[in-house]
Image 1 (cartoon, rainbow over the protein chains, first blue to last red):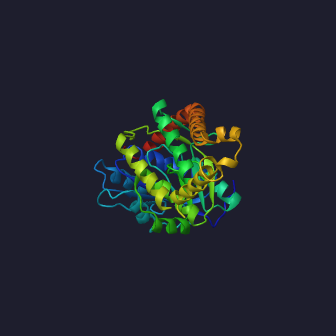
Image 2: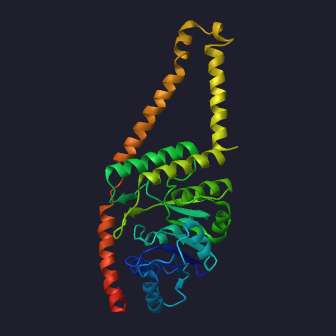
Image 3: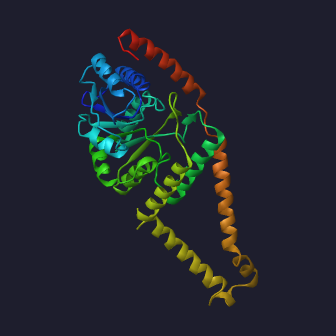
Length: 242
Length: 92
């Protein structure tokens, strides 16, 4: 497939204890960009992982080159929102892809994101688990029910114009992400939700691509009672303030 | 206006229309059969919305795709990635 020579994709990978997954996700990214022909860079923002994520990242720089893998570590765990701001400062691409580094998001979808973006010149292309061929792997019935219920509630209350608000696999035009980062204040799941809600407020267009979400292969997946409570709090805050 | 504001507006509008017709000044002019329907209408709507919600969530839950193939493909890719990275000298 021929790709626009002017396009460059910067992938932001916030990591914390992803020693096992990081090389694999980088390999998959590099391979899928080589196949699709897009120019790319991967920005690894590691929050001082004690497991040696940075050490393995340095090895990856040696393999792929310092123009492809950029290490922009931070001293300690400071949260996702600031990780994106931090990474974006060093991004040189016109598109920015945000994804999880734990292999739950497969890089093969990025080419589809870009294709979708070109179709309608969308400001944001969001991966969605809730439409078309999208879906999940490794979730039991309870987890699915919570996910579907939370999604339904969000759709009713916020009418956001996008089907997957808590997903974090998305492509943004760089200037759009910059604008959104200035506006968003929430954390965790709610942060992803707020990005879409604010995007709607600012009149940005959103395209959607169905994705399959394969729950963490290595390491622990997290969804506890605390997460549900903070999700509900965040949802109600957005409901009352936006 | 916030989403909360929109909801409150909508509810206030519908609520006052209902109150005017069912309980208020327009009450006597509404024919009795209609009034019998009108009085419990909010409860009916609430129940209908509840049923719709349950049915929607239930349907979506039942049709939530299990991406078995994606998981198998990922395992395959992980194997290939490991082998190739090791060949290139990465120490896992």
